Length: 100
Image (cartoon, rainbow, N blue to C red):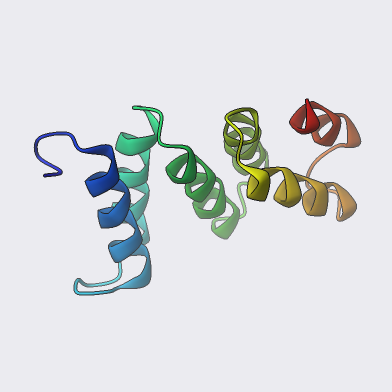
């Protein structure tokens, strides 16, 4: 299904690689599948890309992914940006932007 471009299949492959469920855990492969799904509009994949970037301490990139998914309606991303703003990884302006 992923080979046919199913965004849900791409997302689930990303989750499997991120968690190491049924496959060798591989954060880079997870991000690759999340990216493919996110580029086709999969909101949770975009949110998870933010998490992957945060894991690598790329906070600016993480916040950018969270902002995109927040604008697509992901409430978890809004909350993540709020928490990030409290510890200095995001600005209050970015949080305000996420709320729009």
